[in-house]
Image (cartoon, rainbow, N blue to C red; front, side, top):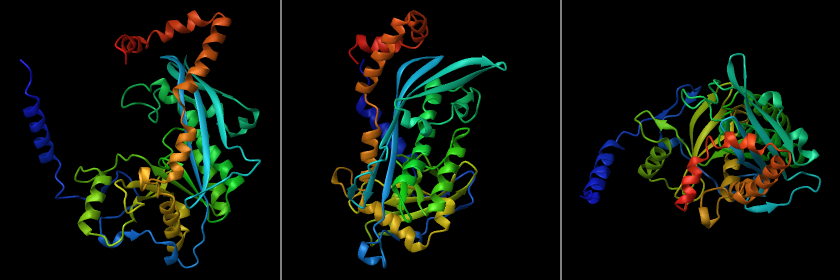
Length: 379
């Protein structure tokens, strides 16, 4: 007997509607913050138009993003291709990079497991695809992790080696951002990182600190846009959804705005957190962070100017309200399956030439059964 899918889905939607109660939006929920801002209509601040900002200057935004993908992998090793890129904008105008500035870094990495001190460790070796990239890559000593390190574990489970393999790319993004700031930016300009400014992994805060120190001295502001947010209010609602509902209830007279949410001052996360709507036509609002000490040194006019620059860059109709520079950096940094197939052929060919393929394939077979099943059914 076939299930009554109409009744089942109707019950599901009715139950979910009852469980998500938007009558009590609550307040931003954080386990450890210096200060959080309750929802108040007066805390919304409009993203001003250029003519409304006295003494406004169009500063540069440098968008940084990267990607990585697994070439070959097993439970005990992961070979990855990594790429980090940047692009420059003044408002909605794309700017060409300086002639002597590297516009991207690419490298291979090999993360492998070993047993020492009665525990499994993961270590990573990096292989720059150009000698000019070498100084922009993280130290291999910073890419050594005890597999029981809480910063890399998945709950109570030992970290998946592919997750650890991605850390090299993340650390390189911080280093590359510092390089771009030095080569391309000046006072009042800003860096826009992909994601939050949370240095989540062991050793990562050292790379963030170097970027903050270099940019603070030069008068450059470090910021980050998160494509997604898992934050909550203290009534269990998603923070982003609650802010959108609150903005609708307030019937704001301005189409684009920013709202302070919390000030975080942990060793690994130093940020002023906002939620912002960057275009009147936007369906999405985003979590946006400014490095805490740099934010606190800015005037209100300078903060307005940062959001104005972002809004100017967020007019593309294909994704209204999302900075176009973020989309460009994402597309340049993205690692495609074509990229992976190219390097996979090289790596497998070399393993065959050296006679190591049987040794490697034994371990790869530990995890490739699912892929074989997918290929059998055409997925």
